Length: 249
Image (cartoon, rainbow, N blue to C red):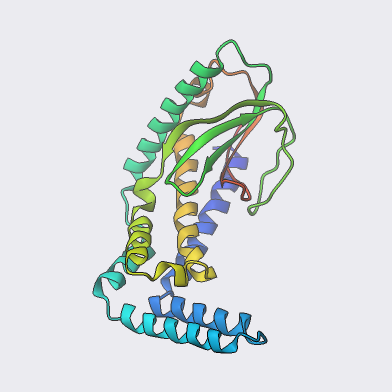
């Protein structure tokens, strides 16, 4: 592995480690307390004080009910711990990438006008990403998620393929669905602490994507696509800051 990709691997590993340490300290109660704190701070000076007090009381009642819910506690505990077969998931990601790039080649064959020097694996709310490829540029190794200028005018392909993240996100998805079912999700999902659970699963995905790219014969993967090296590969949620995943030099 090149020094650049060793650096990228360290960056991703550090993110996963930091999120895991933070999430390990979380409890359902702490999420409700964060929500209550937000309501009290946001509305402290507002004239709707009676309404706000009622809102806080509703959250306290919901908290007490949820903390007695064994299923909610069990699902929350599972979502805090990503227990997966990493080798199997990496191989599945490899296969998804290969199949997705077969689709890319099929769609751009004899149509490519620009050299491909940047790739985004972009996801939205659903647990899969699509491939987007653009033209030449001086693309950065990011130490943290950061917006940057890229050559979007030279679009080569966009929204093609499907890289499945479901096995990595499944515990978080099940938790979300259950909390929505019992009327809790709207109360806690906007808190920074709850976002961190999602972010932990996302960064674990990025870490495994890095390993998937390291196992692929990239010359074969990109055969038939006019690329320019170094080819920078990023991942991101739609409209959010990209994270560097891999660099093909």
